[in-house]
Amino acid sequence: MPRSHIESDLTDSARGRGSHVRLCYEVDQLTGYCGWVLGESGEFFVAPFVVSTLLAAQTLLKIALEAGHGQEWARVTCSLTDLEKRAAIVEMNFKHVFDFVEFEIEPSAFTSAISELRSGHRLKPLNQTSALQFAKLHNAAFTGVDNSLPMTEAQAQEFLAAKDTAHELSFAIVDEGNEVIAYALVKDDGYVDSIGVSPVFQGQNLGTMLFQTVLKEAARRNFKRLFTTVSSRNEASVRLHRRLGFRELERRTVFQKTL
Ligand SMILES: CC(C)(COP(=O)(O)OP(=O)(O)OC[C@H]1O[C@@H](n2cnc3c(N)ncnc32)[C@H](O)[C@@H]1OP(=O)(O)O)[C@@H](O)C(=O)NCCC(=O)NCCS
Image (cartoon, rainbow, N blue to C red; front, top):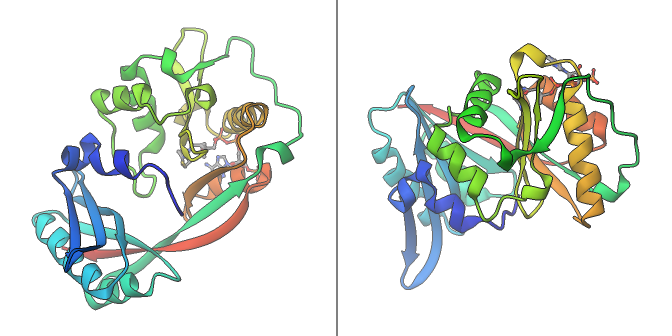
């Protein structure tokens, strides 16, 4: 999935502001780059990981895995057409664990009515919520969701203030006590970074309502597409996207290796 935010993907605090990033040059030609993120429970994610040659794939993966020494396992993702990268991954004994499903929708095609919010619940711009509340909700919602790590208050603040966040499409739902119980965070290229509902309120239509609001607002603001990535093991999220009319573009294989 092409993303237009390579700079922020490579220089965020999760990647040590660029210190967890390597570029590969062959002669004076850039043939690949990768970044990595270390989780506190032994996770090690090599992402992004973009290469144009087998040598770049092998070299970068080897360097990244050395940096992951001491972590429990490493994960990388690969599309079906990325043959050099796949060859290097398989060569390093990574195994397929699940798929990432890439979804896309044209907001203008969404014409359904928006579901009503329960009385006492209110919609507000995400950047008007506190970073602490946003982080707390994110962490509660995403416990156990594939490839997600807990977010610190500082990282939440980074997202809320980011120049490449589409603040006009990023919403929170708050309850009677002004507690954040659901949120959607969208980037300015239409990438839906995440949508999360407090476990107490899951399955009560809040995710649907939030997404409907994002789609209507995206259509009003002439976004040509919204797109996102969902784990094939995340049944609720896959169902939510399908029901709203998202279509599946491609699947990327997620590989894992015990370190
Ligand atoms: C995915 C998520 C945003 C959906 O929001 P929600 O408010 O719980 O979902 P809704 O009530 O609007 O229902 C949407 C669909 O999900 C299904 N669903 C909700 N909870 C479910 C669960 N625990 N297991 C299976 N399906 C579930 C609903 O049945 C519905 O599908 P259907 O219309 O085909 O029946 C929410 O469950 C969540 O925050 N999950 C954890 C974080 C996450 O995975 N985010 C998405 C990845 S970025």
